[in-house]
Length: 230
Image: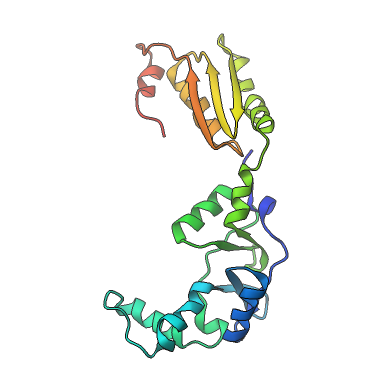
């Protein structure tokens, strides 16, 4: 039920090499309407990424000849000035690149994009050779699923495992990606586990917990369930 990068990535990728001139990169970004290119060595291994932000340093910092803002000092100042003076992809690129593999989960790719503040990630194989690229738009495609498909996945992959062994029955309805769970779990822990698993079904935007929980009792499961769930 967890989508992987291979399912959503773009296999046809425009790339540049270390010696590609600055002006050629800028023109290609406009031509192909993308925000970054992977930079490859002679063996097609990904050695960096050159983005609009990397190129912008030349305009923002006067080609490396102007003073940096006071808050930008030390190593960062040196790196940005060097980048502003660069004239090839190898001189302006960000390295080492942040990459993912085709078998990584889409959730992992999304987390990297969010934490690193990047719009796209090169996808590399075991030898670090370019296999594709995945963008923010690509990872958000996991939410483009029919409500009926999401409900079927939750029933077959989660609820069916529970109802076979329990007195209570469970069901789910899905509207605009929001799953509403109903039923009577035997313990609070069981109900919380169902809710937690449903959150990770592909396409689920949110889960509404409408389970009819038993009152907290003396058994160990109920005691554990009193702690907050994520």
